[in-house]
Length: 294
Image (cartoon, rainbow, N blue to C red; front, side, top):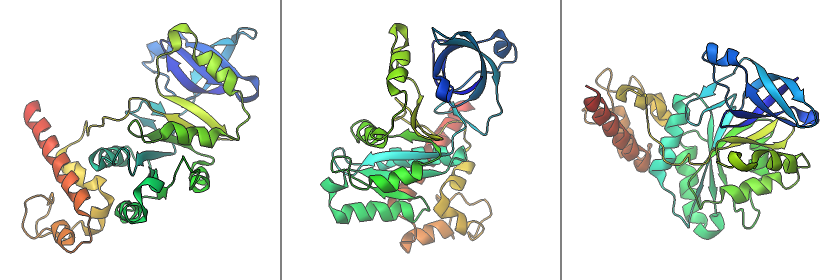
């Protein structure tokens, strides 16, 4: 039987098979021998051990479209990072870290600003412009007033979306709104996932509709640019890309070099200062990491 891993914890994998329900499975020894680790989001084949107990074994991992390192999840179509415009004020450095990580892993990303009813139109439009100018889809919404939800739901439809954001921004409220019309085995999912030893929260897939999944990523708030060379970083800021090759020096990293097209664009207001300042901060961090390595 085929299904998809919606959660994995303590050596158990919960596989949603659609109409047949969710099975608690263990991975067979063949995976350890092949050094393959099943991930949330994997499409798998299982053998049923007990239909009454809904237990089984994972027998095969089907081919992955992609695999993220952080969070450890497979077969993702896109990412949505959720921040509040007020209460708490957005930490744009954290937001930009997330976008860099998604760029590095080649996952298309969008930005959602919640609580726009608290911020006022001027601030909301300013934040929208910063990220739209970089090429990211931006959604303004209010979970409390249920505004802007339809456009977000359309973005999620038919896709597997990694959702991230700091606590207090309304991630849970939005997720609940997305699920409000879903008539699936959510009760069964809850029962399966909350048995005793399985209560620790890890990445999990939440079904929203046909072929539509949210990958909730608890603890995915403190993000670091790991496994990256400092020279790579400039490629992960999409607004820099049209200027590649326009600097005076080949291999310009857009920090201290004269004749830099990116710094010229910054002075002309074509690149947003908050984005450039975060780029320089991340670059310096990577430089320090490099020094420690050697």
